[in-house]
Every structure is written in structure tokens, then in C-alpha cells.
Image (tube, rainbow, N blue to C red; front, top):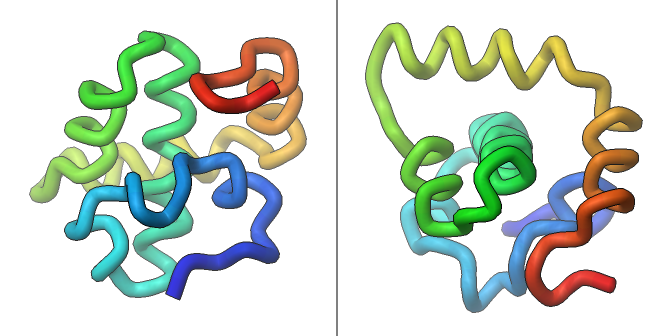
Length: 90
């Protein structure tokens, strides 16, 4: 269900701490929404807000969010996460 082999999504909170609505999404949707969550969390430091942004549904939010996530390479996101570890990461 949750992709443990994806180095970016592996940095999300523990599976039991993930919102049920996220866990139930198709794989491709979890990929971009998980990245959007991490990007928002890095910028705001607020996990709850980050999940609300990542799980918001509807247009034009979905299309714009997918384009934003696609414009940020995984290496850049991983670098930011190394520089600014999130709660529970060292």
C-alpha cells in the first residue's frame, strides 16, 4: 500500500500517523500528494496544515499542485529535507 522504496515518500510520518484519506489514494496520487505535503511542511513547519493542503481536492488546485510538484526534482526535495529535518527525523 505505502511505497517504502520511494526515497521521498519514505520520509513521510509513520504509516499509522498518515491520514486515512491519504492511505486510501491510488499510488500515483499518493506520490504527488505526499511530495506536496512534504514541500508544504518544509515551508510552514506545520504538519496539519501541510496535510490539509496536500489532501485538498478540486480544480484548479489539483492540476496546479501536480505541476508544482513536477517542477521540483526529488533530489532538491531530499536536499531540503536533509537540511531541515522534520519532526521525528534526525
